[in-house]
Image 1: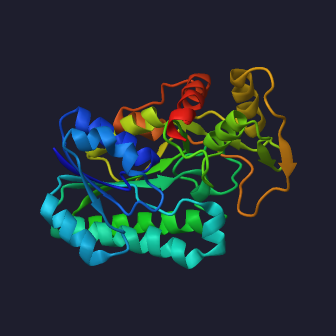
Image 2: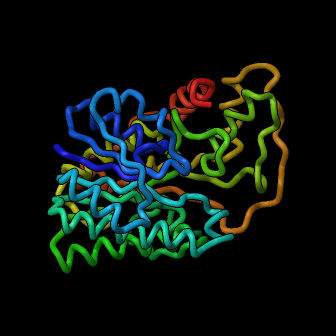
Length: 312
């Protein structure tokens, strides 16, 4: 299969690229390298993957690259993912997540692409809800521009299905973690905690630490993406573990893995746009993709912690 992965030099994208190359696909990567790292693709590039440095906001460039690659499937992962930045600069967030998605969809349509798989978000779209685990039927109530822009982008997938018959699916991810997540970045509390523990610095907890998320290991997520690329189902599908984990529990497990001398956390006020609880109902993913998460969080946390020195 010929595939394009936008954002393919990033944390999730590079793990997906590795899996596609490993199964023998012809893979092209689009990434502006603003947050992705070419080193994440070192093995894949040696094995034949091709990297195109381009911004999804640049419609002519994206159209030209996709036309040249003639992909059967586009995995659209390029995005602005920082909740805080989305609130500080919602225009930038929308240009990347909405306009960028439109550019990818239009390029895919013009190139005769068969399938577009879009990386969306669960908790940031649903907002605070009492229905946990949360199914796709719950009305979206985003609490940040990031969630709003992803929800808007999902609607464009539906538009391209209705107008042009383009086969699309949006996967609403839980909180993804695992090797290659940037321990110095703004997104990904697990990687940030790992980095701070390894440097002997106190991890920062915003709020009281009882807020929960549905943490999904990146290898499990990659399997969901591969399944979505091969399936015919459309619409939106949650990709999560159906398990809530508090920030305090994350730190407890990571500190135990670190061993004696793990720094104590410091607490700061809760941040605007952060929801209290998030957990995704993955029933639909099991039904239409044949997928379920398989990595226990303790195992995933250990693998993530052990990978940080090499990644950072």
